[in-house]
Every structure is written in structure tokens, then in C-alpha cells.
Image (cartoon, rainbow, N blue to C red; front, side, top):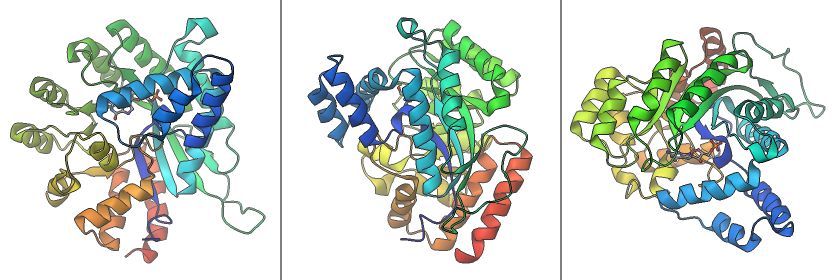
Length: 356
Ligand code: 5GP
């Protein structure tokens, strides 16, 4: 399936700190180990483990955050993550991250996000557009070896962690509103689904919606029928996962036509879905419900977006033409403005002769 890597792709569900290269994480962990901040062998064990339950994944994130949460590292991992996606021909990326405050190192949610933006600005290996409403791209220029440079649109979603208070969630939404001119297009609700109450986040999410930010929610990662129904009633612009939906949840999702971000490897590795052949991808795909194949955390789950498409092709028997149409259909589910959507259509259409 060599054709999947060159195919243009759209990534809409990628967490920054879950998408760090293993090599970077090990390098950073070794340095902190030498300084005595962490025990490096513990880090190595966790990083190299490739089968984790959902609660174990959240323990791993706490460890990753100890290793990565300083301004310089946030800038570095942002650059690397975007480059990695661009190199596998992701043409539009919505990257999400939780703005973090850490007084001991002078980090505020704003300075954390400024470090992310600095990472975007520092990208030179590929052409990047991350400013909403106007294209940054120059005329396509060719690298000295004659190969056309990769181009990627990047937009940002600020995540609210389910451990946060209402006040802290509102602070994130206000920050998102102030950062619209540097590509922030929406809000995500994520973090350990066994923690926190929907009612805590609702005021912040409502404020975001009232101010025309787009919303995506991690929904149905664990069995929680009441929360799933409340989330669907809120009518988010997209949801992620939907692993523990019951009939009435599917009915509502379809009625409201809410696109679903599908993260196959993540769902299987965390055992949220017991086997790929019973994954809800098939039902949604057959019902022509909008769905988008995504990685979730390509570092943590040792995958790539091309790999996720290959898994879908192998598991559900998609043809090349169907796979290309699926990748292209993600344009509609992006939180980009119409001009960017038009540009993306042109990109897909110019690639289409190879795939149809
Ligand atoms: P960050 O926001 O720090 O850049 O990315 C890591 C964070 O994303 C984790 O601490 C967690 O809050 C969130 N996250 C990553 N993967 C998942 C997932 O599969 N489910 C949920 N609910 N949250 C996730």
C-alpha cells in the first residue's frame, strides 16, 4: 500500500504531547534522568511499552508532561510534530494541545501557547500556513534537489483537560479567542474520561460556541450514557471516539450529522474496542455518516496517519478510489474557513488522477 503515503491527507485529531517522536522523548528523558529529576529507566520502560489501557495512557501523559513542559521543549516538539505530519503528505492539520500553567518555571497558559506558535514560526523544512483568513504560502518553490516542498496548513485547537475547574476552562476559551489571528480555530474537551463532570465544562464550552469558536468533544470513551446524551444535545461541531455509544446515541449523532474523528489504533490498543472487525467505523462508513480517520497520539500509539489509513483499507476492504474519497471528504469537517477549504479541494483534485 505504498500509494497511501503520497496521498494527500487531513489530520483533525492529534494531541501535541501524544505525538512526540520516541527518539525525542528518550533524549529529553535521559537529560532529566542525569539531572536527577526523574528515573530514566522508568521512563524508558513506559515509552517502550506498546500495549496500554486507557488509565495507563493517562499516567504516561503525566510523565510526558514532566519531560516536555518547558517553553523551549514545547517549541521543539511543535516543530517536529508538524514536520512529521507534512512529510507523510498531511496537507491540513488541526493540532490540539492543553495550555498549561506552571508558576515554578514562569509558565502561563499564554506563554505556553506562545511557545507553540514559536514552534510553528520556526518551521523551515516545509511550507506552513497557520494564520487564519489569509494564506502565508509563497509561490510553490522547489528545493535544490528539484523536489517540490511539502505544504501544510496548520490550525490549532486549545484543549480543556477534564481535571480543570470551570474558571480555568474559561481562561482557556478567552485565550483561544485572543489567539484567533494566529490560527486558533476551536476548543477540544479531553483528558481522563473517568475524571470531571460535564456540568463543570459546559459554561466555558457555551461561551466558546457563542463566540463562534468550533467545538470538538472526546465523547463516549467510557460507558457514561448520561454524559454522552448531554454532549450530543450540546451539538458540538465534531466528536472524537464514540466507542461506548448505544442505539439512542447513534440515532442522535446521525440526526444531528455530527462528524466523528475515528482513531483506530488508539481504540484497539487501549481496548476501548475489543477487535477491529467490530469497530463502529464500518457502520458509520456504510451509513455515509461523516467520519475522519485520525491518529490521536502517533507517538504514544506508535502509528502514523498513513498507517491508520492502511489499517482501514485492510480491515474494511476499501478500494484506492474509496480511500481517496474518504480522505477528501475530511475537508468538510475541518474548522477552516471557506478559502482554505477551496484550496484544499484544489490540492486533492490535482492529486486525484493518481487515485481514481
Ligand atoms: P497535550 O494537550 O498535553 O498536548 O496532549 C496530551 C493530552 O491530551 C493528555 O494529557 C490528555 O489530556 C489528552 N489526550 C491525549 N490522548 C487522549 C485520549 O485518547 N483521550 C482523551 N480523553 N484525552 C487524550
